[in-house]
Image 1 (cartoon, rainbow, N blue to C red):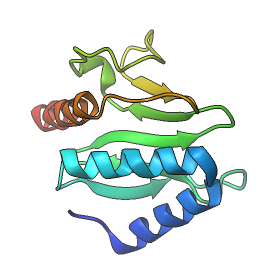
Image 2: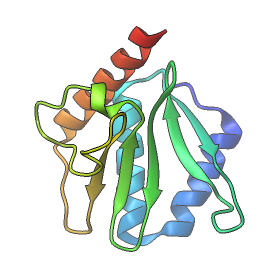
Image 3: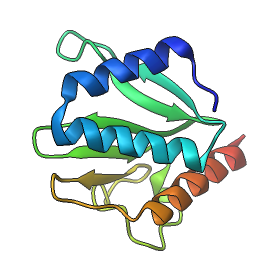
Image 4: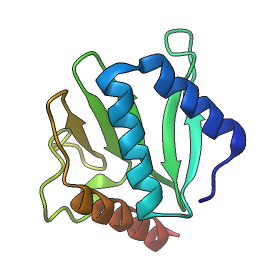
Length: 131
């Protein structure tokens, strides 16, 4: 697993600050991303006064996805999601965008872990094909 130590620690802080079901969900998705792509690199981007802990990103040859938390959901936005095959239909948000696609997970929501890992690997393949 390739993880920049400071970004990993900052993401730990972000997850702890969110807490509850949203923190647990983001933590579980983080683990699945690392299982799907052991070469993934974690980064924290887009810090601003309203979000000083920034937005977690997972990268391999470009951004795979970002992870954001809202009151009612955890949102994973895949940077090139419109180009990523999604045979299991995990994308359920931002479906009209020309580039991105997202997965919104609500408190009672479940995610097919095998399909999610396949989606992450497909996103990496798209990134690599763009290089």
